[in-house]
Amino acid sequence: MQIDRRTALAGLASASALAGFAASPSTADAAARAAAGPDAGALDLDSAPGRLEALIRMRGALDDRLVISFLEGVYYGVMGARITPLYGLSAGLFRQYRRREDGGYDYANFELVYVTDLDSGELLEEFRNPYSGKVGKPPQTRLGPSRLTITPALEVARPAAFATPGSFHRFRAPRVVGDDVWITEESAVQAPPPMNFAFNEVLTYRASRRDLADRKRGHVPTEVSFNPVIGWRPWQGMEGFEGPPSHVLGVCNGRVVTSTGELPPRYQAWTRRFHADVLADPLKVLAPAWAQP
Image 1 (cartoon, rainbow, N blue to C red):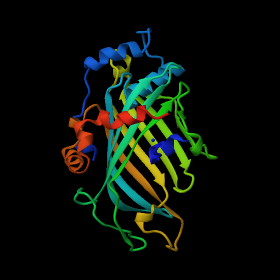
Image 2 (image 1 turned 180 degrees about the vertical axis):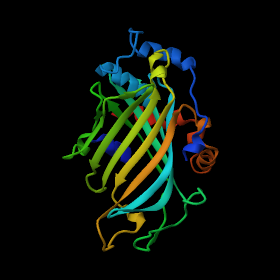
Image 3 (image 1 turned 120 degrees about the vertical axis):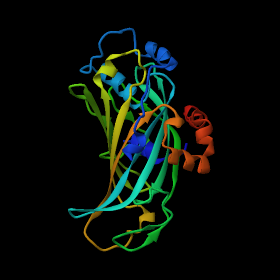
Image 4 (image 1 turned 45 degrees about the vertical axis):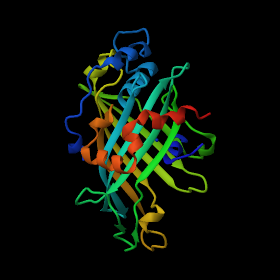
């Protein structure tokens, strides 16, 4: 089984370019109605089943349609109390969900990440570290597929290899203000050898309470923010640098969409060039995860 960064996290997983994305009731929603359970009444966000249903409909879908969390933003170096912009990021997290007999959900997951130039937004061919002056080649990363589980208790079940002290992957209870519903996902992991890196993520999903009240909809339009706090990677050129303690902070925003055609044209063009199979049939790319033990 291939273990990627998102699996490691489970062991504890520009906004303007996304403008106009929206989801509407579809034939897939009909299949999702049964998955919501027999209660067609109001969604109770104070109950564990209601919170899980809201999370899945925001982060994914009650049925097995494709869902993609698309994110763009900037990664910063943080040294002392000062931030320094480093590079941009354009990322897609491709997922498919299936309900479990215990009421939780399994999901297949892979991600496709491009490092971009801060000014042009094009792929970054060379990264010059502003602290050390070292030059490295940024990876354009494809991770997965892997299969993970969200339990009825709103935790992500983790492989034993990543059950390290202090590691976790969980969801906070929904926060509701007016028509806004936010759910925050938190994860932290100290990956074991040979990876040996620390990774922390905070993602916040926002949806409409009115949309969630319509329980015929297996997926609801959702905005997402992504804030990772990570150590330096080898290609970033900080090895041997003598200076104050430092780390990397990401500030990214985006939306959850349900087709590759909703991804920004530039992201589609890069993927067509480097990973044509993803645009051709992303569910086929996810399929091997369902065969994993």
